Amino acid sequence: MNNSIYTDVAEWLAEIVKPRKQLNGLSICPYAEKGSWEVICDQDVDVKLCTQDVTIFVLPRQMSKKKMEQYAQQLKQKHHTYVFLPDHKDANTRIKNVATGNGKHNLMLVQKRKKLDTARRVLEKSSYYDYMDAEYKKKLFDY
Figure 1: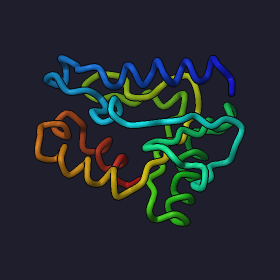
Figure 2: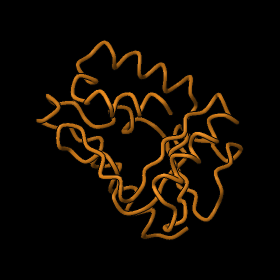
Figure 3: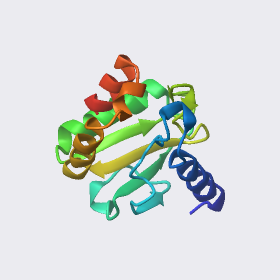
Figure 4: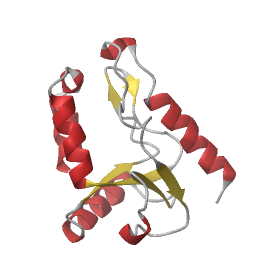
């Protein structure tokens, strides 16, 4: 494991769990703080390796954003019980002008669909999704 990648991911995760004024005190990812995670480098996405709440696969730096999104959709078709969330280093995704992506590495976040859907239902009862524009929310739920 490349220590600098692990450090970058850990620092990014620390950022996305911070409460934000722009989001009325909510964080980018309210459940990330409580969840277990691991980073896997130099490996194709393999759900058999997903033993934590979130498994983060580091994909090749040269992979384009479009290719990553296609890969996520291919994985979704093959593994219906998982969610594959691509985070391309150049994606520049934001919620209310707060960066949501890591901005340094091409990552594929893999989670069990049932657990994520349960968390999403809880968040729907709050104002969490009100801060996302419609396009961002649709894309997020399409994965």
